[in-house]
Image (tube, rainbow, N blue to C red):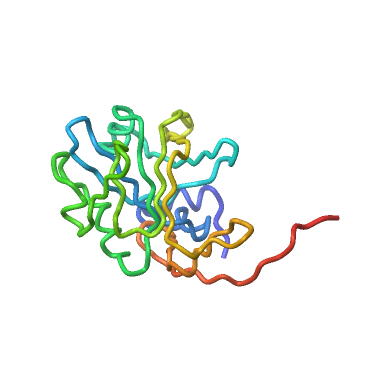
Length: 203
């Protein structure tokens, strides 16, 4: 099966969206937690979280164009300068997906979707208590992507909370053991299985 650019452009909107969202393969599913100045929490699922560097430890995610729908996550990050990234596990995939619904600004997805806010060490963003791998980040920068109006939001890792006994002697985390999940498209979730470990490749 072959799709040219014109074929893709002519597809019905939802089919095009699902197709192009799926071709990158499985991406990590994460919940991003934020709060406004009044302490009103917000929780949203993202499939665009990425590693950007380890010295300093940087992570980023893609924010869809402002103006399409309210961007409470970004507004809170700008105001408070921090956010949390929390792994999604198999046992609460449906709850995590429910955070993608467009709740009013004064309604917390934590409450509506069955999650527990966890406030640790005076950090101004809530973590998801149910998550076994939680990351607290300070806001560093927002880089606009002009071609489609999205932005790359960059944060620096300030805090890392990981359940015991899943880090090996080399520092690798056994993601499969905590049943973290991946996503393709907008609503297809996958379990992850470790296949193998290979030595550092040299010519």
